[in-house]
Image (cartoon, rainbow, N blue to C red; front, side):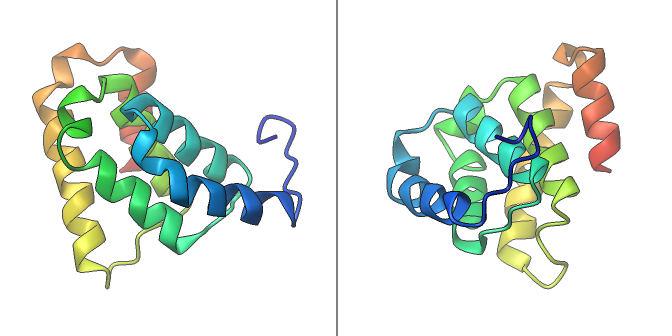
Length: 120
């Protein structure tokens, strides 16, 4: 839906509720894909964004996340302009992702590096 810029007002809230209940079954790449889809249609669902970010920023997903997944996730969150500077807990999670990205910096491809730069 994001590829076609379809931001159906009823579809995304239903998907968000479903993902909120099933996000624990997602792998790191799945989380990155969901965040990217949400940013493609500018859909902000605070609870889902928090759940996805916190799960990705903690083990086991943090060490499972590929450079591509980390770059895509940070880029998607930056496009959504989320989290707000006042959200200390979410900023700590972003910091965990950023630290992981710096450890994997030599493994990023050109697209991943561009996404990281774009997120900054």
